[in-house]
Length: 392
Image: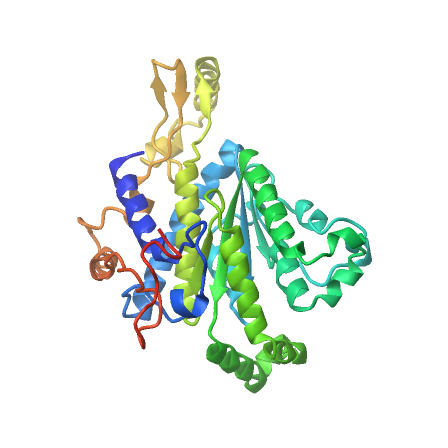
C-alpha cells in the first residue's frame, strides 16, 4: 500500500476508533456513547465536504472490489424509528455504481418466511463476491423487535424446547457463528447502529407531521413503539455487548446530527474496504501480447488526419488508472489503480494541499484529536467509562 494510502488508512482508523464496541465489553448507551458527539468538527459544511470527497474514495474501492470478485461486503444498519437509515444509505452510497450495491429492507416476515428458520430470509439476500449488500434493518431484528414483543415468537412456530429463558443468548451465539462463517467465506460484515436520542426522535416525528411532503413517512405505530423506548435501549445494549466480535464489530454512530452520522458511516465502510485492499486483476504476458496486436490493428484503421489512438494522443488515461506496467518478476502485466488524486482529496496527503478544499480538510483534521477515554459520552456529566470499555 502506498505511503499516502497508509496515511489515509491511519486517519480514518483514528476517526472511527471511538465508535467501535470493544468485543467482550458491556455497553451502556447512556454512559458510553453520546448521540450528539461530532469528533471536534465544528462546522457542518466541513463535515459535508469530507463526506463528498470520501464518497470518491468509496467509489474507487467499490470498482476494485467488483473487478477482483473475491470479497463481498454486508452492511447491517440498525436504528430506532427515525434513526436515519434511509438517508444514510442514500447519501453515503450515492457515488457508487448501483449495479454493485443492493439494498434489502426487512419488514414484517411473510408466511413463507415464517415457514423457515429465522435466518433464512437474510441468507437469501447476501452479497455476491464483488458486491455490497445493505440490510436496512437486519437479522438483528430477531433479537430486538422480537425480544421487545415476544408474542412474535409464537408466529415463528418454534419447537417448545427452543423458546426457553436462554433463547436470546442462544440467538446471539447463532448469529455470531453465522457471521464468522460468512467472514471465513469472504463476506465481510459491517455493523452500524445509529444511536438516536429520545428528544431527537420526538423532533423528527413532529417534523414528519408538520411538513406535508413528509406526512407519508409518519406512522402512528412509530409513536406506539416509542412507549417501549427503555425496553429497546436495553435490547440494543445487550445486542451490542453480545455480538460485537473481533471479525464483525459493532460501530455506534452518533445519529442526532444527520451529516455527522453519514460521515461516520462512510468512514467505517471506507476503513473496511481499505483493509480488504482489493486489487484490479492482472493480465498475463500472453494476453498482453494479444492486446498489443489488437491495438496495432485498430490503429491501422485510423482515417487520414486522425490520431491512431485518440485517447493516448490527448494525454488521457482511464479514470483512476496508471498506464499498464509489466512486472518481470511475476511474468504478468499489472493494471494498477492510481491512488493519488482521489485519496489526496479524501483523508490522505493533507499536509500538502494544492486547492482551497484541501486546506479546509486539513484544517478539520488539525482540530480532530484522538479522543480521550469517555469523549464519546455526553459532556454534561463526567464519563463513567472504564479504561478499555466500549472501544479499544
